[in-house]
Length: 95
Image (cartoon, rainbow, N blue to C red; front, side):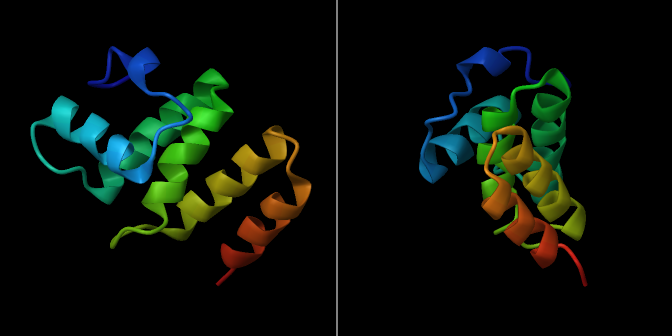
């Protein structure tokens, strides 16, 4: 992973505030949408779908978030066996 060598400290049960604090501690600044998306993508590629999901749930609420995040969020839900949620995200990701 990029600058986040201790990614195991990121827990899939973290609250929104805890997620933002996790990024703040590692970046020494508030996280931007791009930062969160990159970590989510790394988690996804590692097969850590529940961790990627938590990042992406935050990502899609931020200014500057792209539809690509919704698409990846849909795949996270799909890989976690949540087909209905997956379909909802895929539909939201279609302009």
